[in-house]
Image 1: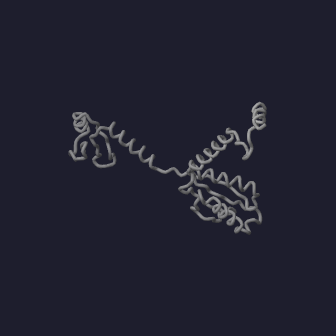
Image 2: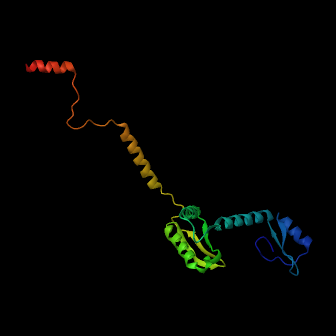
Image 3: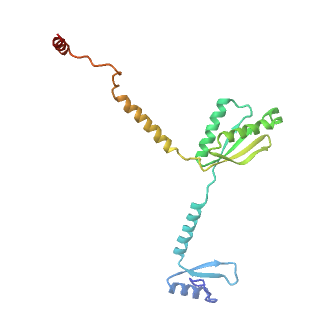
Length: 202
């Protein structure tokens, strides 16, 4: 085949090579198992460059799935629960998915509803940044739920930050001003002015 993909007929290796070199191109074997083998005349350097660019473009558009895992116990304490919930929120704000696992031990697996209630409670409390992609399901001695980030996950509340900063600046500015004198309170007059006023009255 020539550079345009058109058939140029059956040629010996030497004839095909001379044909390619005459056009300043390369002879590339594309189907070695065929009978006879199929070769193509092309600019091999340009071909490799185009293939690399296509691969880069495909990688750029390929979404990388990042999954984190957080493990809970059915009888987790309040402090540990809040700490791990914070980790879940942080991962979601990083646009990662989170696999939340409840680990049952001993007779705890006799009450799977406790683990399910805990997982659903977590999902409800962080629903602003989390959506349930896979509901709580038993997996051996564990119960697993998969959370994905919502559109709001990772969005910074810049407007709120600006409002707080402006409020702080206003407070600081007011603090530098001198407080006005109380109503009805007059500044004390110098003694000379008081004596002069008394003399005029007399």
